[in-house]
Length: 376
Image 1 (cartoon, rainbow, N blue to C red):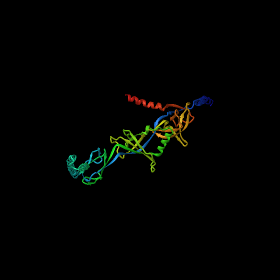
Image 2 (tube, helix red, strand yellow):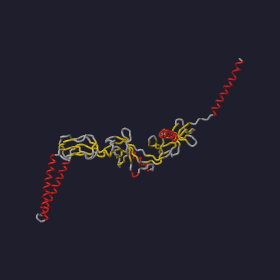
Image 3 (cartoon, one colour):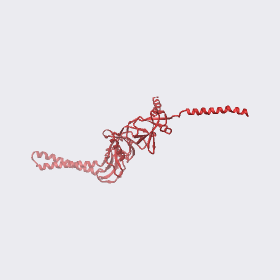
């Protein structure tokens, strides 16, 4: 028994020494700083976001009507096809109008011969002033009648007044149409109108920011526009904002506006819905921060910043617009702050952190392989 106790004592001493050593090491080791990634706030000039639901419409929707009474002999276009200005659409019966032209030509020739006979006689005082005036009036009347007859004959060929997409025929071949009968429609699609509406609160906020000096409009208020089509692709072309109404629609609370786009390729069709982006307003020295930097609490939005001693502090901010994946900060930040963008879950106000990388460095690292690959 004595030997067993003596053999156990060294083991017990070793256990206590090991435990004391571990306790000393744990007390001596400092708390590990939380690794975080930060982004430096940098004010810059950015475009004011303006995106609207819009609808395309032809710049001219023209009614094609008959100008004389006649029977439709033939339709000379395919319904729905693109037609050019001056292209023949309908052929009306010409017989009676050709006869009217021949009759008017005969009357004109007769009046012209009479005028040529009377004029030299009048110069010799062989006829009176009245006979001379009557001959001249008859000639002018016959000339006007001939011109009217030729015009009516030309109206038998119904042509497209503009270039655009044709509609279905309103009257079929073989029917008698009268003067002013509607035959079809032609929608001029170049240029193309893009009609959209600006919510009144949006317009009011823009005016307020302009009055505060936080928004700068384009020179001479000439705005440009871009389009996103139904398939998600951006339209290859830039339009102009030609009209912004000066009053609010009482029933909808919006302000009517219109953009004009070149549509020589025919990529935009009348009635098509699109997304319109209005460009021109600039926010000078605006502060934009990534949305994942912002934490929304019951008291408002806050961001976690790192001071010059690598200590975390919470900063209340006020955000307004979302521009892409960023928030526009109205107040709370002035520029130069280092905001935590990665490691937010472990970082706490007052805690020490260790900055592993900045967002700027991360972007450079991501772009370097792309540049190297492009160089190859």
